[in-house]
Image (cartoon, rainbow, N blue to C red):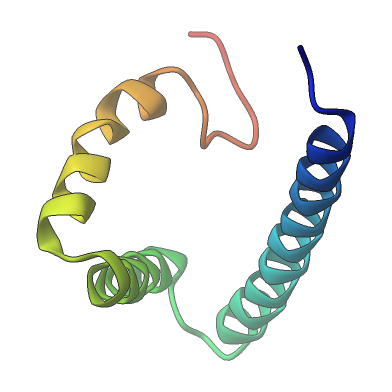
Length: 89
């Protein structure tokens, strides 16, 4: 049997998290665009962003948990999960 109240709370929490993710991406996109406009190469930004993200995750969850997360990245990359535009070759 489903707990309607519990489902509604989870749904509201899921929407709140999704909105925070959209906001975070908007902030990062704005900062990225500003850095590119100032002459920073996007590949340098990407490496810096990956470093910052991994360092933050490690600080929060620890090396083992982040290493486990990273193990799944090749599959997700090959599944186009991070591709903004997909071109078939």
